[in-house]
Length: 310
Ligand code: NAD
Ligand code: UDP
Image (cartoon, rainbow, N blue to C red; front, top):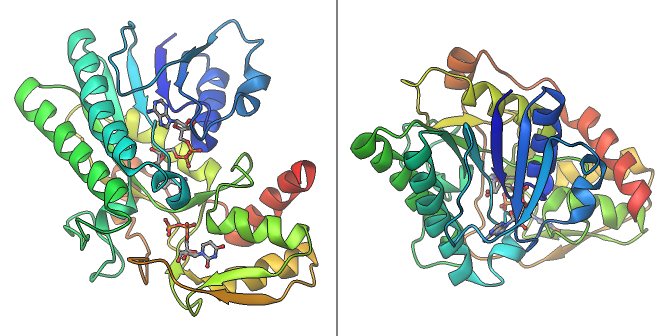
């Protein structure tokens, strides 16, 4: 039995990860400050004696003895990470330093939940890990993008300087049950709007693209990455290469919910990337991983979940 720390474990992705790790017979410590996470997400795990919940902020040091650390603590939705941008930078950077310091002391393996946002508004399409990105360092998204980029730097530095065993996963847009209904991300917004009979808000002309990955596929990729040999650090892209415009996504949501919603157009937020699609050649080769759930199937499962909460 491994003892595993999941920071941000009460969030959308973290709750699925805790559940999967417990199902595989591990002892799981879930640490969260509940900024965007909710106890509701992990209520069903609380009866398990191998699950421990700790209220803690990752920007302050944390002392625990574990074999592995998954560092997910950080708001992920633009609305939330822009709410207090200084705190977002602190969470990424000081959180990384604290988790890396912990990993160094206890000789644990540590995985960083990085993001496709490190590529910014990309000029290389699809995005490969060797692409350095196109990020505005002083824009609205920079607290998140640059925070996550600096965290990657710290992970590499701790690996090279202190031999810490690290893994960096670059996660592309992920959706599924337990996304917060007021989270502001596009999949949850469109589904909630459709189920409530409201119009669907398209930002800009709706021709920008994203690649949407169902959460179960991501969790599989994360666990496979953690289990790779110590010589493989990543970064590795994990995402679904299917690429859709926001109008295509809205049309799918309308069709699958049977809603009568119309599309309404709102201004495009600044620095909103025009296109995004992962090159997953490396994940296929090293992790023997590729996504299994297509967008229609994943949306159906997600819509079923949202029907129970909105
Ligand atoms: P989320 O907002 O649902 O989860 C983040 C969790 O971290 C929440 O439970 C929140 O309360 C917690 N948290 C935030 N600041 C904290 C702090 N200072 N101390 C302790 N806990 C803190 O978001 P998510 O979608 O589950 O994302 C999880 C991770 O995956 C994040 O690091 C995010 O950057 C990364 N990621 C997610 C996506 C995606 O599409 N979901 C894409 C790329 C990267
Ligand atoms: N978006 C939209 N309507 C919404 C919410 C988002 O058209 O109600 C757009 C947003 O401008 C972006 C895309 O959907 O182009 C994905 O946004 P999200 O916040 O989900 O993720 P990110 O931009 O971080 O990839």
